[in-house]
Image 1 (cartoon, helix red, strand yellow):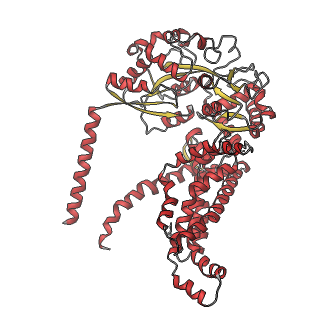
Image 2: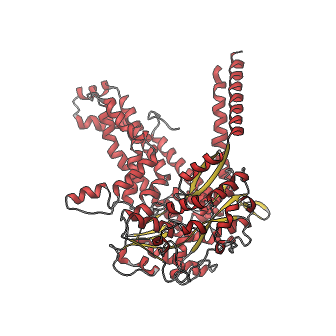
Image 3: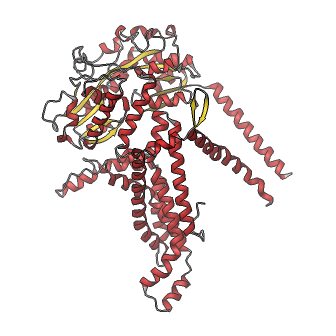
Length: 274
Length: 347
């Protein structure tokens, strides 16, 4: 503990840029300015409980949930292939998974816009085969596609890092005892990879449920998600109080889901976030 | 001892950085310009830098409300902004703008008299007109057979999934208000609710609520009909001759964008130089030619093509805009518009 002072700058950083803003957001959400100065009020939270806004919340959770499930279904086999010991050129594949993340997130999303357009690349190819054109852009599917595409590396990497650490002798032992491939997967690999799955789920779900750029660009602003609602309060309406209240509700939901996940993930193996 | 050395080293680094950055601030004048996206020929900025030796930091915004919030919340220091009529009125009321010394802007006399002393700035103390125009429907003649002359076509189910609306609350609510025969500046909650219902009804037909992308979408024939600002219509028609612009018969919005200096500006002198520079005939022509909006500049207008001068999108005749209204600042009532727009978008 001699080197403790090394952590002080980091602590200071956290206080200035994380703790203080969080307290400010909380204050904005529970105080409203009236003629008699600041007054405590839960009106902003009450307003969020209107069916209209709950619908926005529900829509965000559903879309983010679907995206997370798709990421898991697509990402798990990829992580398994990457971690399997027979795999040569493993680092190259891993590199391919991470490569898109080197490019700016906005640019990649804009690129999808031009691909999905009515006169875009995909419809051009389809029309070559005499099908279409389809309206691929500006619907729920486009938003989900954008989320899956942008966040899938966050699913693959934690699962991969957990699987890589599974001791091969455990699998060999199971095989020696007569388990076939399916049983090995069911009884050994999958349970041991669960910590990675849980942190993958939370690392995909959290950014997906709060994103506002993807629904704006690929959803055409029609599918207002919770992130858009918050953005709108801060940037357009200037209603910081309501925006803060929505942010706090969102944070509470994320904290609860994190708590549930960490309850299942007792070993803390999957590249922990907390 | 080691700890002391490290802190001393850090201190020296920090001091030298602060001294160096102090230097650069003294030697180089900087002008912070905050403009609408795609609303200037950017080579003009370079021209200003070269001529006056002042570095221009150029940022853009998508709606008046974006800009207002950023100025209002402080923390940013812009020297020149380009608000629209109702926003100028609101910002004057809230002391967010400072007076412009017109003596420093000799080119001001080149601005057409009819654009001076308008209601939003009665004595023309705070703003210098930059561009003006209307809001209307841009449509693709190959995709729409019937004549377009009314906002009602944006509610026609035949064009489901082919309509683009503006992601800008006063403009889009304004479209619905005009369609229903109300004023764009209504303060009647009942009328506003009817407009809201109309826009909610329309929502399934709308392909997307867009900002500046509307130009790319219409040029690329992604949609048949779009609500656009007139200058964007001119720019689109230039790229795609199938497009046509119309000001609906129910009337629409007539707007003016002007240059203004926020009260928080750090460099008023350079701001006035910049405003004067943009009012220079050659520069005003260059900007008008590039962005396609209608110029209030008398000499720049004379330099334009005959064809453009006869284009209703660029220079509408008085009878085309007889039903048009200018936006007024609605004061506190604007929160009702905020609420209605949020409710429409959250549906």
